[in-house]
Image (cartoon, rainbow, N blue to C red; front, side):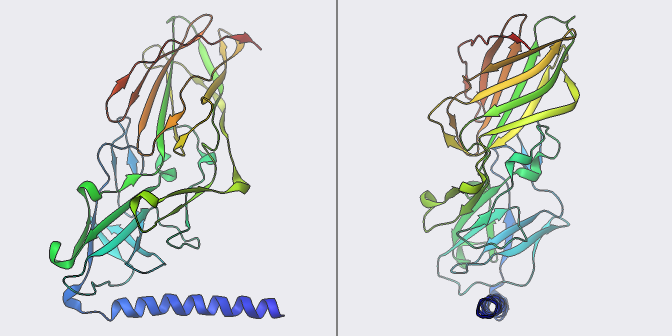
Length: 319
């Protein structure tokens, strides 16, 4: 009974705190009303809507979480007919004080505080570009006073734009001979904590912002099983699209496939796709499957600095 009473008291206090935040923010001067503008930093890749070049834009009905200065609970903003609309009116404290605003995408109905923001579960990805935005996570910071803004608009644009917290990876597999019939039944990407469940936290400084892994939900590999085997076409091959946690791995990441060539089953793998995966970077790997080996032809990063990797021979083992 004592535990129930304590829990009830906690819930009541939480509701009162949330209501007090809303009342305080709504009672401020209408002349200092706060509005919002947002965009995604142009050199990154992934939600909302992402194309194969890695360009990302917000779309209608997207929802972001927004932290007012000194507030620990987020306010939801929704993109409605091209404008961001808050759940309730917000206002600046005054015209001259510098304020730090934090925001994140996507907004979640889960319990959220400034230092504990749930992130999407990367282990549920399907490996396709369609729907990958459901797993994207973006963050933004903006520091300004009312006088420095355009009529009180907090502008998450330019250097203050939303940035991707994850790394975006595409792996294109190409076959060597046009007459071959190559079907992929399974693909797996491995690396420590690359796909673990995580939370995000905003701190006093941007350098202290970051991701925390949930020890109870560590996932070191994303394995995709295709009910309908994926066909490696002559011209474009077959491309997988993945998001992963940013990591500096101790050991190289690994990639493996199970496939059929002209009716015969094989497996192939490599552990030479690198150790560094930075937040907001787009890694484009191209692998060529020849008769006896899989070669890494190159890797291109989203800042368009092309990096040629050495050819890596992968032993092909009949299963």
